[in-house]
Length: 212
Image (cartoon, rainbow, N blue to C red; front, side, top):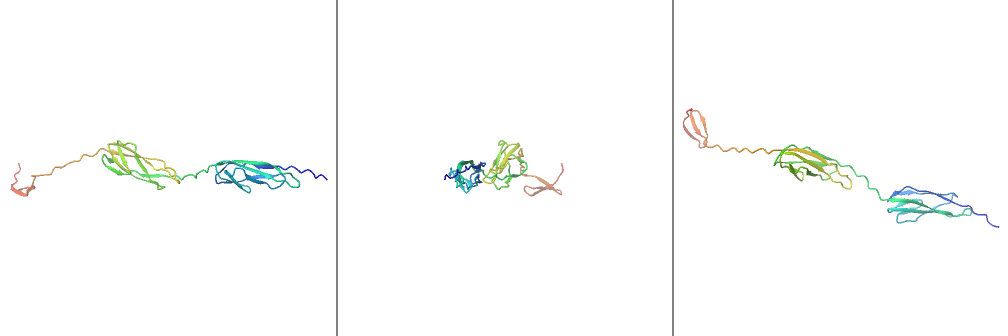
């Protein structure tokens, strides 16, 4: 007796969205005959498959072959392919960084002031002069060069955890240097002591003081 013809079997798959390296995705594939489906990676250098879970291994296109064997009633199903992209891993977002500056007072040309500036991330801060004809900077010490407005910029670079800080602008006034007053020493001066004249450079008393 001729056995009855087997029924056809079809596999339905759902194409997943892209994943990143190191991420996993559960693949959805079913047989309309209710038979088990087997998933095998056709691109093991890009993605691996365990059961119905795929893992991104490297950047590229991942292809997974889905098959289902027949049984006494159903024929084997035509293979289906699940395809998706594995992208590079997105680095975690960096934390913000803020610079705090203590506004310095005005200085005179030739004088210095230490600028106090810190990063809340503990990163080194860099102070630079935007007006080198008015003021210069060495490390965080500002030196007045000429009268005018001294413009400074304070920055802090990024690292693996923190983003670069927004630059902070600082201004201070550099004034004209105050002329130095030199007082010559007094010699031969006299002062009154009753009716006696005393030479304070020698301490010798003179004769009676007579008002001119």
